Length: 331
Image (cartoon, rainbow, N blue to C red; front, side, top):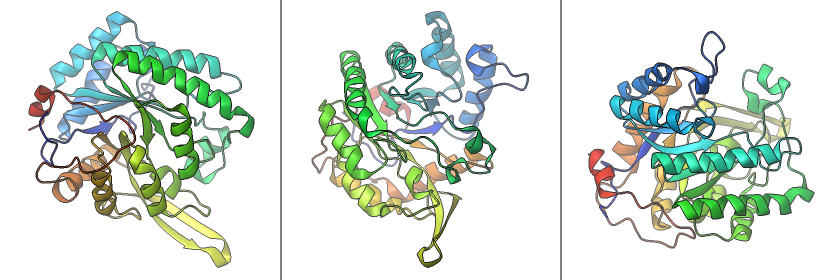
């Protein structure tokens, strides 16, 4: 296997900045492939050769086999490799839609296998409330909170998904998110350890926690505790200011190199733990794709290793095994 370096480390653009409906209200999932091609073309024009298919844009798990073939053909023509799927706000322990979300998650794994995607990220965060949707930044309004009595169900259903994924050769990554069982470093680690499958790890999206307008864990404590379990990584950053005396907390999106989280230090630690996963760059607000491209360039220029020899540590979960031809394509 070719060693991953700054030149060839897989960095995917999140499809997060793109709407899930067209101007006439049609779901992107139900739209003509030309609609998909337009978005993938923008991603390619921004200098990306890989995409994280965020399902707030396109639900691969709800496409028929024929439509998935159409998506693969479009991506190939545009020159963007579908590298990961982020299935968000479809919690398998939702009290109303949990079973439906579990079925959808299984379909998403099957779709990933058909498309050669080897990393799928799931979370326990649920649909935004009407109050969150009305806010400028949805994270400034409290949303769903997981209930302690649902812990066993979370372990059982995520284990079920992990076993299915293992049978397909896919890694499952669990996205950290506030007020869920993945909302603190200790809880997230406990969840992965209780699932106990070597293909199930963490997506340490600590930006989701740093942005909260309330007291938070130290960003470094989050990094130190969760990176040994990471197999995929949503990367974004926020400016943050705190005035605990007045109980005032403030955060807004920032490009990765400018925000509170020191990704240079964080990635050095990740390498020490043996991390080799796909990196997915994200951003909320403004021209999100351009900020993602800036984040990618920052990673390649200043953060990722300039030479091989990164397998230094003791990652608790299996890491992806990228095909040599895939790595060669990114050079």
